[in-house]
Image 1 (cartoon, rainbow, N blue to C red):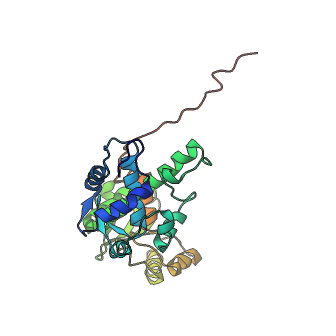
Image 2 (cartoon, helix red, strand yellow):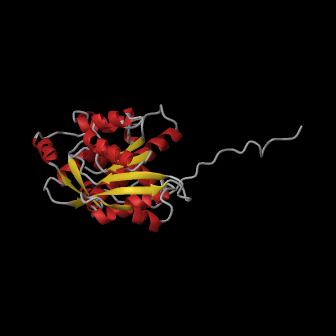
Image 3 (cartoon, rainbow, N blue to C red):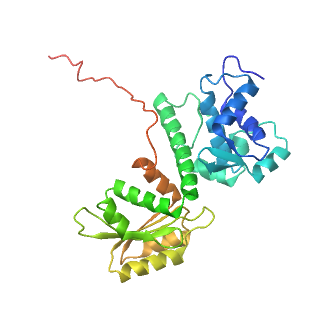
Length: 298
């Protein structure tokens, strides 16, 4: 089938994309985009085609049908192989809602992540742009976390220091680097200055753990114990993983010290917000009427 005037919608691309990577090999988005354009008889300059391929990849990833390997690389998962064995005629949003991970992804933001293909006339152009922006940002955050998880302990140390400095903590790079040291388990332990004068300290512990290894209450209790032992009042516990509910409840219940928990999702969002590991690619400026300019005296 070819599309002479309009490119296929994202859900018309999801199944062909999954079928193309069914060989189990590692693929890149650029390679897949070129291959599907050729297969579908499309020009890469076809409006929205590349964007919709990216949406299809994001949806398959969030449903666990493909696995991101960082740096734009990905491959099919066993779940993806199992889905293809059922010989589906299409893979759309409703189909993907059978997977809990995809449901959770949809619920992460309000409104839920919605490709332009699904959007009706109930949304204003501004709302459409906001939704597209949130989708792109979420995809970027996912790729960032994949790269961070692949990085060496030394790189992770630098990343944490860079992020703290970008957020206004730590004083100088030299002082922050000296105060923070590797913990021996792929993480960091130490403190940073809360202000440039060094009047108070924020104790930091960072764990570069995989998504399948959550940080539990015992780790937070140990951190709080160390914090109290050092006479500290404020602490930040970062992880590339997530926190168990027990860890979250415990951190919220303690009154002697203040402990902030930052999981992998929050970590990557902070990186984007403070420009750590990312660069601007494109910017849209929306203009409005300057009504003051057109006001007529009297």
